[in-house]
Figure 1 (cartoon, one colour):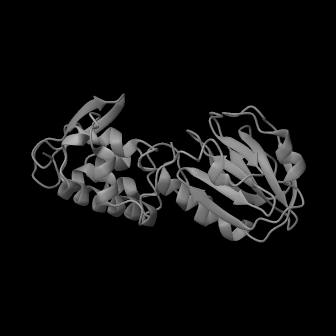
Figure 2 (cartoon, one colour):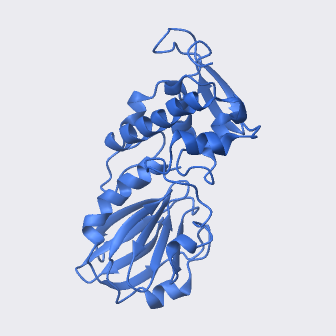
Figure 3 (cartoon, helix red, strand yellow):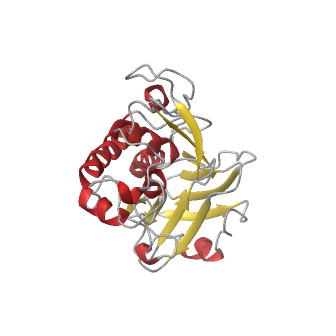
Length: 271
C-alpha cells in the first residue's frame, strides 16, 4: 500500500500539472471503488480550477473554490498525468480531464482506492476529521507523543501506526523508525519514557524524510506519477530482513507478527 512518502511524492509529481488548470470533464469508467464514486463529482467538478493539490495523511486533496476532490490510492492505486484521449487500460477507472488537453488518471487494479467529493471544508470530512497530526509538522513532538502514550497498553509500534495518533507511519516506516530509535516494537507504549519518545520522534522524521528524498519504497508495484520506482528499499535496515545480520551489531534480525503485521527488529540494538 502506498504510504505517506509515496503519497507525498505523487502529490509533488502531479501538482505542477494540475494547479491553476480548469477541469473540463470527469470520466468514470468504474464507479465501484472502495466507496462509490459520487455522481456529484461528475456534475460539480467540471468548470472549476484546481487551486491547490494538498496531502492529508494518505489522502490527496484537489482543492477548488467550491469543493475538494478527495483521492486515496488504496492498496495498488497510482495517479498519472496523460494526454487526454489516451486509450485507457483495463484498470484505468477515473480520468479528470483538463481544458489544456491533459488528464489525471487513476489506475487501481484492486479497486481499494477512492475518488470522493465534498463541498464542505475537507478537514471536516468523516475520513479526515479524526486524523492525528502530520509526522513532519511541529504538532508532532515528544511531548505530544508521550502524552498520547500514557495509560496505553498497546505496543509502541501500534501506537505510531494509529492514524488518530499520528498519520502516515505505515508498517515499513514504523519498523525502520523503531530500529533507528533503539526501541523494541512490542514494548507497551505506556512504559516508554519521554526521553525515548524524543528519539522516536526524531527517528520517524528522519526515516520519512529520507524515504521522500529517495522516491518512496518499491516493494511491490509503487511508481511515482511519471512511472519511476522508489529506491528507499535499498536503505531498509530491518524491514523484510528477518534472519539476516543487523547492519549495526551483526546479530540476527528477528521477525514476529504484531497486530497482524510482519515486524522486524534487532534484539541487541533495540531494548
